[in-house]
View 1 (cartoon, rainbow, N blue to C red):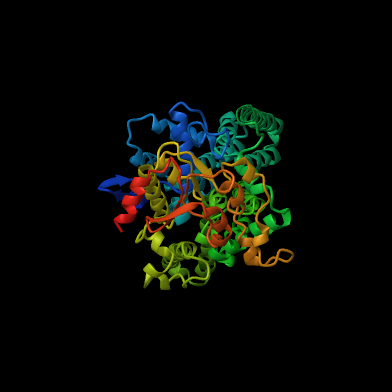
View 2 (cartoon, rainbow, N blue to C red):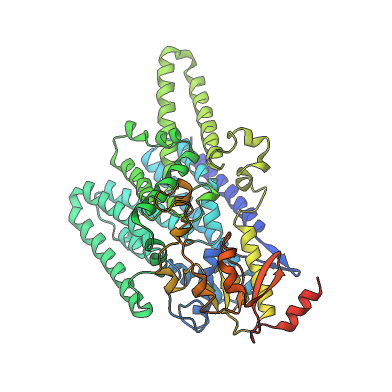
Length: 557
């Protein structure tokens, strides 16, 4: 295949993805009172609230006048979001440029992946193009990237970092920009330390000519960036680590956290199909190449990290969580390369027996490889234990591939839209002094523009430092698999006696599902009002609730 043809086909895939991302983003927009609104994944909306407060000159806090608590884990992404809040963009559309930026970052990531594959398998354009296709249309990557999380830019940084690392080893020189890039990425998310250490360790092990230069550049910059941000964090927030660390990594026994991480990993690999997952690593049988080892180590590093932290809170939605997602481009790179090498081996063996059919076999092999990749992508985009991959094509509306096919907006969108409407309603029914208690601390507070009380403790030091609610397990001494999976990081600590009973918020939007009886004694002083298809509780007699408007709402029903 000529170079111009490769570039044309790559451009075609990127163009198709740009169109795909456009439809995805368009599906996320919605109307409220005749006006178009955009909103991100709710955790990203927490970052957006911090960004708006910072852009308005109140500092890196949740809302003006809030306690200094680092309720986010992506500081430079918050600063990036804050930059857009300085532009004359209506608040209702402020999320839109973040979505578009996510698409741009992801597309550039795909270009770097193409460059990596071409370097590792020169003269083999098909696996490079298939890799780009697989990554582009593996739905979880778009879901995280286009709904405002920092996954998009981290995917780009990891792809660029691996490209520079391979280039550094091939050319037997140290590239300082590699370490600057990776060290700076820890300002976006602290856990970028994992791929940093994998890449630095790999270069230290195999770049023997410059071993200690790699150690000096990598170790020095890592120490500088980690040490610098830690000192700044302590000076500003009074804590050595983000509040999300205390929320998710403390208060849960280590064995339960690791078990949960392991169970979610097993489920994830099962969703890819166990043999397909192992198949991806067979490239190492054919290629005793240290560069392929780096690709494999990147994947393994992200999987191991996900186990260590107990996974994410959203695995029940299927696909790769936010930690594993960063390794998925490299998984598909391994998968595509393994497919090509096995196909090539089979064709060479068959060609020895059927020499006259060598050309036909070569074409047939490529067609089979394309079909296998499409099949693997369908399999990965469905839920585990869902329909057989080909059967979903007959009725995609009844399986998870309806999201990947964009026949339905992301499964996060309906919730985010509800939170937006809740926030807008509460802005009309309360004064600016009203405190609103929430379990979803993003969109509601962002659009209500009111002080918040975070029932789950992302932005509440007392809750974050408490033990998880292990008492809700069916068997605390011998918890079941489901009990452990229910310990969702960031969603397993709450104390209504403190958050509602002591803090006495003016509004309680909702409580955690199945805890109504537990919350009931503390909601006895609240007036329930059915709004936006669910019950919201207003503190009886609160001077910050516009009771005349509440009465109008009740009388209108």
